Length: 106
Image 1: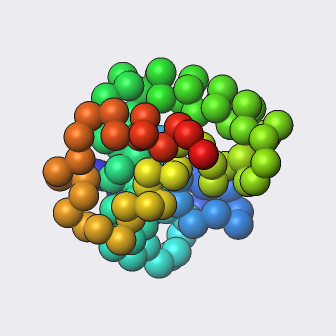
Image 2: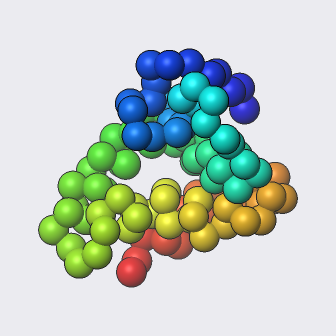
């Protein structure tokens, strides 16, 4: 995964954002292995959904989860998988296709 450090993306208050498999890091924000693993999982999710469908599904699921109990962002299936597995640095390499589907239920 390519990492680009800059002063514009992401917005102030955030340290990194993954856009189409490229990790944009704000200034000198510290990026640890956990963050790299989390974002690598998102890159795998994006690829298997041909990028555009990842973003469409992400937004739609976020909207649906706004009306459900709990934190909408944290309950998105993509985020649930990434947060659950971010401590396992080998997970992105052995991850099965569409593993995020099992995180749809709550």
